[in-house]
Image 1 (tube, rainbow, N blue to C red):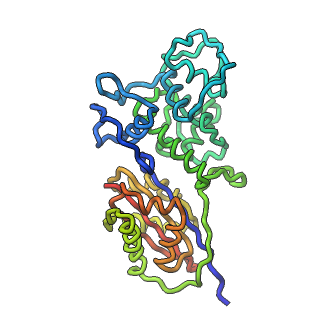
Image 2 (cartoon, rainbow, N blue to C red; image 1 turned 135 degrees about the horizontal axis):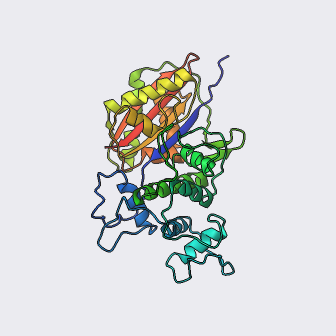
Image 3 (cartoon, rainbow, N blue to C red; image 1 turned 90 degrees about the vertical axis):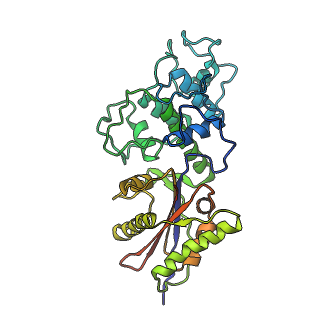
Length: 360
């Protein structure tokens, strides 16, 4: 008797803009579209979370002050103070433009209440990690899945820094220097906030949840019954691209271009999962999807990845992805232009599928 093979799906994306895009903000004269922070700046400025300067500039490299950070985070999290709370700060009065935002975050314990707030001091990267973690109620653990050469456990921001690193809110290279005492630039603040917003949206939708047993955030795995295994060949695997483009055509979306370089990366990921017996977007060999694209020197401005395990036909794996909101969003993302396919089987015959989407 043949056993039914359990199937599973996982999806990830880094679009750097909301899936449903509002009208774009007026372009800042000093933020070209080629700049790495253009999309997150555009996204959060559209949401009214951060503004430019009267001369039409954004000032990418200017340090964010503590008062500015309070305003940005309070607006992003829609945090407001109660009427009864008054902080003890003697250097921030109700006349200050960020007073209510500072008051709101202090009431929540995100900033420590005391005699001085130091509103004009630069926000450090360590402080940034703490306020984002607390503002978004992110569960902190001590797994240390990501480490930095200049962060030790005696550092008061250690757990906050490693937590946002594990979630990809900061993309500082594993093992590198995090520089916790350096000021946060306006470019980096936009990216940190946009990634935190994306994480929060996925958590609220149930795509990401905190697994108490593993003590880390994981993506939801969708399991559905699947027929017994059948013979698979490269042509049938490549058929998934046609099926994806058929789905896009039905929504009046442009077809994705089959990208040989992207397929080589997707194939490397599929083989890595099959050989090393894991099923996740983060590879023990290559790191995150973004890190893997960079490792293979692939140029991208946005990416998404759908992976599946145990499916035996092109039709059923694409249908499985389409039945899952997160995977469907990647398939029907209007911004994506290119697609790569990877397919591999492990020694037990379990199948691994990888679709990597990219904007070129």
